[in-house]
Image (cartoon, rainbow, N blue to C red; front, side, top):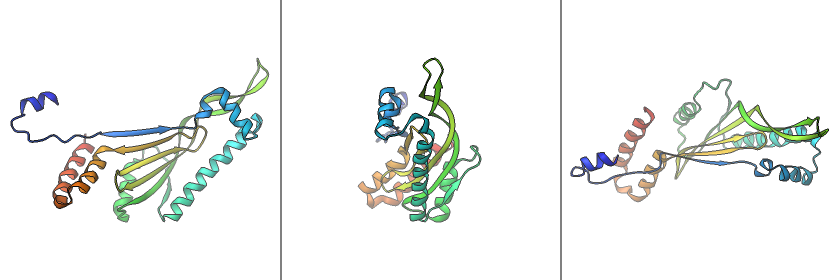
Length: 203
């Protein structure tokens, strides 16, 4: 990039740059520290032998909230049976067909591998322990058309430690930011950014 700018500096009047993709991650922190893990369960009055039942109840609350949100916003909640289906392509198709200009587009869900927790017996110590293990659980994908950030996604794991990812695309955010700053040349900016975004998706 620097060599390109140096070579054609006489023909370049300005440079436009932004982040390409930004990913925010979070999880239920107490369960990643052994001491706090047991402290949390003690506060919730959950015995180790009942952890599976407790975790399932919390998981159902998250799923119920997703169903309530999709119903409240009158947006589809779709279960995907295959990981080969492009979630983003499906969400964009729904957005185009339903002409969603702002807000929740859809909620997609599917079972995927994850890192989670379970209770196992320790033969040496002769007691139950909460252990980290790989398993499969349901993931929820919330697709939005945000006024400022554009097309974006929120991914939630429905089992402990409930990892969450918020995905923002810089190519979606930048044109919206410019629209606020230069409403007088809206059509020109829209056309230019559409070309930029399409070229980015084809990479």
